[in-house]
Amino acid sequence: MPLKTPEQYEESLRHMNFKVYLQGELVTNPVDHPIIRPSMNSVKMTYTLAMDPQYEELMTATSHLTGKKVNRFTHLHQSTDDLVKKVKMQRLLGQKTAACFQRCVGMDAMNAVDSVTFEMDKKLGTNYHDRFIHFLTRVQEEDWTVDGAMTDPKGDRSLSPSKQADPDLYVHIVEKRADGIVVSGAKAHQTGAVNSHWILVMPTISMSKEDADYAISFATPADAEGIFYIYGRQSCDTRKLEGSTIDVGNSQFGGHEALMVFDNVFIPWENVFMCGEYEFSGMLVERFAGYHRQSYGGCKVGVGDVLIGAVALATEYSGVSKASHVKDKLIEMIHLNETLYCCGIACSAEGCRTASGTYLIDLLLANVCKQNVTRFPYEIARLAEDLAGGLMVTMPSEKDLRHPEIGKVVEKYLRGVASIPTEYRMRVLRLIENLTLGTAAVGYRTESMHGAGSPQAQRIVIARQGNLEQKKELAKAIAGIPSK
Ligand code: SF4
Ligand code: FE
Image (cartoon, rainbow, N blue to C red; front, side, top):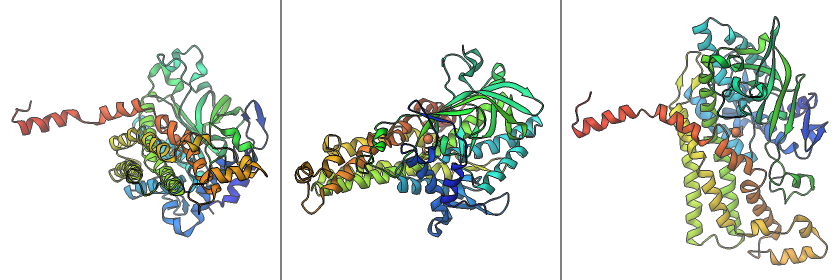
């Protein structure tokens, strides 16, 4: 049965042999670690909702390979309808977790590797696509969570991979053997790495001939010999160690990033999907980035829905919800959030079929989508802080609220509208704090800026895809200027 239950997913992680360092210590049981577990819960939600009949349409799809029902996160988009459903699924999951649910990176990587290996084989006579389809079939059968890994540490940005003082600053081939390749290097800020079964590695930039040893793509079990992780810190992460539920803001869910290190890792040929074909590295980067820029028009919108709802509640709890400027600011937040969704839907609806049969988003619109994501969540967060008020960051702790003596004082002086328990007000303000300044702010704010590529990366694609010459011709025709 290709669909894993959420319990089977959690259990499968327990059988993995991850090597994870967190705050200088080797973690023996990542699944139950209080800092890691909320992020595992977010991925687990992708399994939970796939079992729920009311979400079946969005969360599952029919595999074009086997005809079986699979989780949409393991599916290759077979139509523009699939692309639209992907964005809707991501909005749903953002709403249910108010966090990064991590599984999209692998979905986006698999869709990109599919069409690029197909076109590469056609041009060069290689046989990567068959290998990839074999891998994908196993992913669907096992309902694995796959982490797409693209971003290398990159060292001195003015130098190409092969010119770096340290060759490991980009993942590269150390040795080619009869049975496979050995790779070393690292991938930085890898979303959901230690909640994943497999890693699908791609090159991080368009490569030239001198960098051929860096133009590699392969899949590997996430706990393979030689791979280890250094877990990234998040603002306020140690609140998760305090055993409180209010102060964390979102005690159930979260996301994570980690530095993923490859120390002479062996990859059998059957899992290698690019090995030196540098002229196809740029296409792979562009398509993966395009899919992930589409993704942000879904996931960030879902998280935005929760933030807007939290702010609306906070204004009710403090008795200001009827003020006209409050209503107007909430309208502005909704307008910005829905504009992001429009972009996610538009680049999906305007998608097209690639040679392999997998559908690709409209690259220009996907990049416009992500460019807006580098801005609008910041404005939404600014308005959220405006309406939440300063108490969001000056409030006493849950321990003070629960204290036998001063608890009454906290109750008394933090109360807003008399009919609303003080605890509710504290809970909703802490949620807003979490989303705008705490652990979830990694996903909602800074990741909105840099995830799926920093703003300048989108502007480069917009410049390339924007078709300025055609626009000039349009203007000439209207203005009565002869065309060349
Ligand atoms: Fe998915 Fe969004 Fe997280 Fe990327 S940032 S993995 S698209 S939830
Ligand atoms: Fe991301």
